[in-house]
Image (cartoon, rainbow, N blue to C red; front, side, top):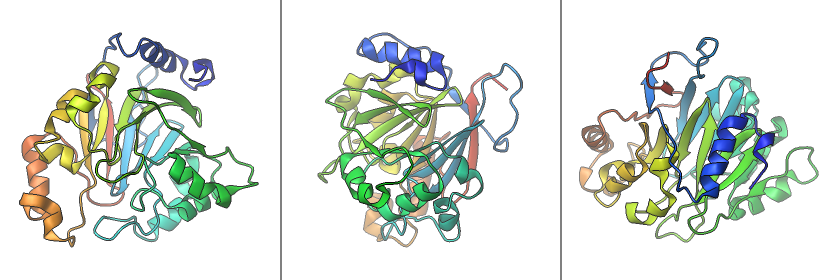
Amino acid sequence: MIDPGGLRRRPLATAMLALLASSLQAGCSRGAAAPHESPSGAETGRGASPSLSVTYLANEGFLLESGEEAVLLDAIFGDGLAGYPAVPMPLRDEIERGLGRFGEVDCVLATHAHADHFDPKAVARFLANVPAQFVSTEEAVREIEPLVANRALPPPRWLRPGRHVVELFDCGGLAVSAMSLHHGRLMIKNLAFIVEIGDLKVLHVGDTEITADEVRPWRLSEIGIDVALLPAWHLTEPTWLPLVREIAPGAIVAMHLASPDAPRSWFGSDGSLEDRIEEIRRRSPDAWIPTLPLEERTFSRRGEP
């Protein structure tokens, strides 16, 4: 645990720390997030909670922005893997060079070391241009450490939260929590992150195949997740549909949809990307399903400007 007094927004971090210290027994009130089509960076007015801009980059890669805060999640992964969307050039070059809005990033998070989520050379190139904090699993950090040695930047940090433990830490001045949610059949560490940004809590679960019964000890519904970034199988497959109810997010963003040219077997009984998207819409009518790089949605707490 860290001293919450060092975090950028002390009240939220302190509340989270108190919640975690009591093993998530204390409830936490939540105003569910409401999506809006307002442009990124819109003024929210003095005294109002800032809105959150979520920009889709590819696969599970997103840029979160609110005011002067910015976070990249699973967004720097080079060529990626065949069958899944990758960030196209020249956007990829813009990200890795830290140009424009990407130069304002404080924190870079990677849920695990698979090539459609993380590429060590691409991340090292980004960190050479933007002195952000990088946090991921031990596997990912071990790959990047030789590439960033002797550089004047925050050292990459790896986490291994214990069973049913939520680890709170500082990432570029932001309060972030991490949980170990298993990847599934593939033996690789997978972290889920809860990022506090713009007075909202954003959950990114990576590639977890954890079930509702397995995740229940974390009592995520009591933390109050405003926006949950969830893989498509959580929103379509009967095995994982109860997990969404266990998280009880205010808003859902679908991710990790295969490319249109992926083998049809990848889409299960749905048969195509279009059918998979339609199934998500049927089961979660309010979910945002981005498929094009730089698609953007702004979220704020329901009932606020």
